[in-house]
Length: 202
Ligand SMILES: [Zn+2]
Image (cartoon, rainbow, N blue to C red; front, side, top):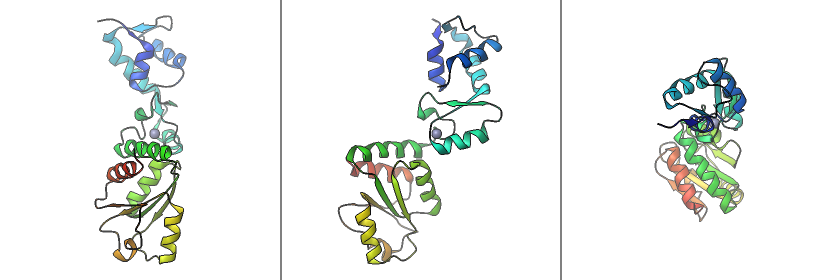
């Protein structure tokens, strides 16, 4: 097997920091020297381990940056080569589907989303995944809302998600109708993201 360029190794594992810093770690571990551009395939696993022990790579979302300082445990926090490799959120399917939804909404020119219903935890997760990239109005579906308030929500939002069914009062959900409304019957965040993305034409 041919030697693998070290730049490729960094990219593959998710290290998006300064290559010189990674080189220093590989050299200290006795795996490579900075003068060498490539690394032998037999050493790849050990190199990936050494880098993972020295660095914590995360995407540039504020929440992830904050959490990284807590989970780093002595490792240096560096940028992830790709957001999907973020060690805080990269494993999250919710995050990825919301990311795709945000892209579709932006393309459509949508900047405001209103979510009616869903559990408090689910609404929090949507908020976390959105990370302020879209303005979010998240409403408890069990708390009464007036027709006037609902009309204001509909006017404000580019898309309104009515998120059923157990934590949503029909008296509330019935207020939200019209072309902006996306009605969901399951409560998964993936479904929310996928359906909003579809509504945006993405
Ligand atoms: Zn992240």
